[in-house]
Image 1 (tube, helix red, strand yellow):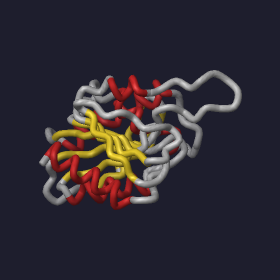
Image 2 (tube, rainbow, N blue to C red):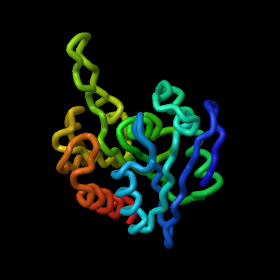
Image 3 (cartoon, rainbow, N blue to C red):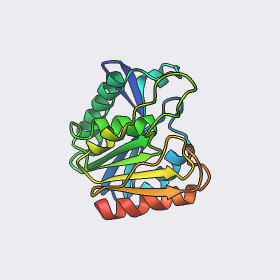
Image 4 (cartoon, helix red, strand yellow):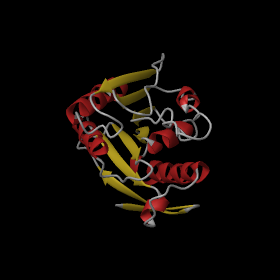
Length: 202
């Protein structure tokens, strides 16, 4: 466990080190969830099996016991502070792959350049919020994905109400059974992560 002071409070990092460390995978949680979500656990196990150490990051608002997420700029600033600490005190010179589930994936995408990420892993990327009965049409978050300039994997449930992101030259999209929770086929989630990491850092 590693506590990291950020401009917006203390973040907490849960560290799992691989036996033969080839890279680090740093993952953030969803807006209302934590680092024990099943897809994050599946991704962690897949990464460790490939010699990739894992850091699961709890944002300061979760460490403080709040469920409602902080504004995006605060999430990004805290995340950057955590990545700086991991790189300087834990990971050293090995490659850092960043990512997360849902909101955590968005944070990783928005900050991938400044953190020097070698790749981005998005579990259940929330492409377009489901439309409410009243109010304007929701805005797509595709520009956040399109701004990433390193290899990206999106693992998306086929019935995700947030929609299905398109693939691109740098972005692979793997569809698995289930919805936004990605709980229906965890072995498929793990396999997608394992295969992508093998190509990325193997």
